[in-house]
Image (cartoon, rainbow, N blue to C red; front, side):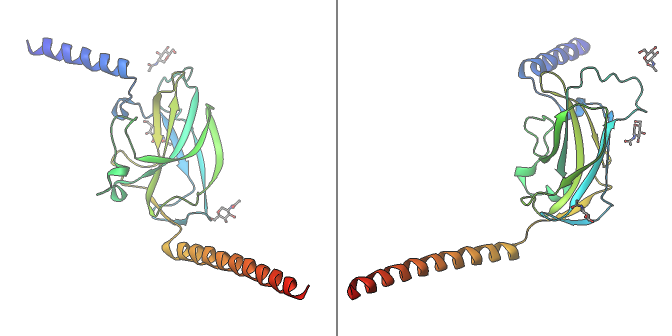
Length: 201
Ligand SMILES: *[C@@H]1O[C@H](CO)[C@@H](O)[C@H](O)[C@H]1NC(C)=O
Ligand SMILES: *[C@@H]1O[C@H](CO)[C@@H](O)[C@H](O)[C@H]1NC(C)=O
Ligand SMILES: *[C@@H]1O[C@H](CO)[C@@H](O)[C@H](O)[C@H]1NC(C)=O
C-alpha cells in the first residue's frame, strides 16, 4: 500500500512537472562550473566596478552530454543574508517563482567554455551580498543544469556590492531641481526680455 501510494505520488509529481513545465532547482544536476574574479568578502561598487566570469561545462562531472544544451545564462544572485525578511528576493525551488537571481550578467547560445567574460556591475544593483550562478537551457527554454560560485548552503565565497547610495541619489535630485530652476529662470528671462523689447518698440 505504502509503495503504491509512493508510486502514485511520484507519477502525479512527474505529471504535474510535465504539464506545468515547471523546473525544480533541487532536480538540477550541478554539472557546470562558474569562477569569478571577486574574492571572498570583497566589496564592489555598482555602476563602477566589474566582475570577470569564466564558466562552462564541469568536465570532471562524469558522462554529461551537452547535446541538449542550447542556451547559457549567468546570473547575479542574493545570498541568504540579503534575503532575510525580503520576500521579493525569496528563494523558491520552483524556478519560475524563484527570486534569488535577479540580474542577468550573460545570456547567449551555449558554448562549452567561456573565458573571462567581463560584466560591468549595473547601476541598479542594490547593496547586498551576492554569489553567481549559471544555468543551461534546453530547446524548450527550461533549465537543465546549473553551476554556482558558492557551496550548496550558499554560505562561502560570497561578495558584496555597494549600491548607488542615498547620497548620490540626493545629488541626482539636487541636480534635477537645479536644472528645473535654471530652465524656469531662462523662461522667465525670455519673457522679461520680450516684454521689454515690446515696450521699447
Ligand atoms: C566539478 O565537479 C566536481 C565533481 O562534482 C567537483 O568536485 C568540482 O568542485 C567541480 N569543479 C568546479 C570548478 O566547480
Ligand atoms: C574592472 O575593474 C577593475 C577593478 O575593479 C579595474 O582595475 C579595471 O580597470 C576595470 N576594467 C574595466 C575595463 O573597466
Ligand atoms: C560514459 O559514457 C560512455 C559512452 O558515452 C560509456 O561507455 C561509459 O561507460 C560511461 N561511463 C560512466 C562512468 O557512466
